[in-house]
Length: 219
Length: 290
Image (cartoon, rainbow over all chains, first blue to last red; front, side):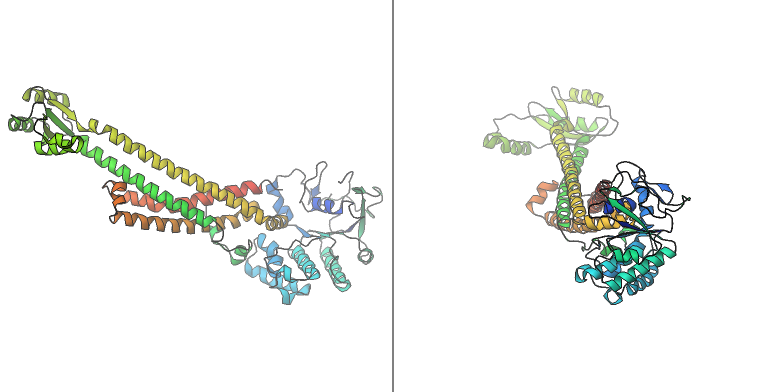
């Protein structure tokens, strides 16, 4: 259960969310990618108060968020291509508009030759890469990743981090929940939020270098 | 409502991972459509029969003359010359005795049994029946004019009641079909809950998710309806071709063009009902999630 959380993520920032297992990292991420509503308090995203927003209003905000799930959440009966293409198709892109970016993204995560493979035939690392490709295919404004490097080797972890930082440099706000100290240390300038027992470990210093409160920042 | 949801891109059709016409829905709909068609045909045939009988006796009267037919020919001429009367005919005594024999056995055919004379006639529309009855009564003392529609009223009431029963049965079958579709839709939602959660998480709207299920329900329902209707049509054709049951079913009345049109619309109406109910069930279930 999360409690007494009050922080603001700057637009275009790069954040790591850390803490021991059960600290509430996944719960906090679920609030951020609008999979849950808070029982109390407020969540502002993209300048909009969304805690009590009608559910019909949520899809348009979810389309601006890319999510890498801890358990990948790939649709088993769809090919890797179709899984990655899903956000574009849901957003209304035509097949012509979908084909190129999806092929490019699959090539980037090293799965160009596995485009027609279904998730059960992919290794854990390959599934993770498909999940990441799906999360970033539509250039989200907010990227939320829950242990994104948990199933990939060091080289792929470095490439994924490079993808995240590249997206971040293009303006995407990135928040990554991880235990991977190497990942954190390899990302200079990233800020860190530490959770323990559902609250920030040090509410005054947990968020290092808090950004200034500017319009459009996410709270 | 546009029908673009029915013609989805192949990628969209792959999302549920199941091919149409799988599962029990087409079979259930086929059985329901078959039953609805047969019951509706019976109801319409009864309506036709009732209408035919009612029309036939609407202006038909009988002049009943107690004591036999001693002066029947003169009475018949008086009836024919009465204003407003057309097509007057005396019912032969032999015919009446034959009818009585069916009810009473050989005793009905003996000459010992007194029977009245009977003249059937039609009254022209707008005829003053009271005046006509007085005039005919003076032509044959003790005679009585009987409106045949009154004699057949119990039969017509029974036919109308059977029509209502048939309509109620059709509506009940439609309700049962709708309930089956709701159960099938809920089952499909449970089966595909994970896919739905992923789609919602990525930003799919309820309408986008519903379209996937609506299409499958529509295709299943249409296929089932057409199969059920085809089987029903074959049965009706076989009945109409002369089986003994056909006579019982239709009472000699044929289905009119309007009746056939109604029967032809049943599979499409059932498909539309299933699609609408399925869509509503899916939307209602989705609204329970965030």
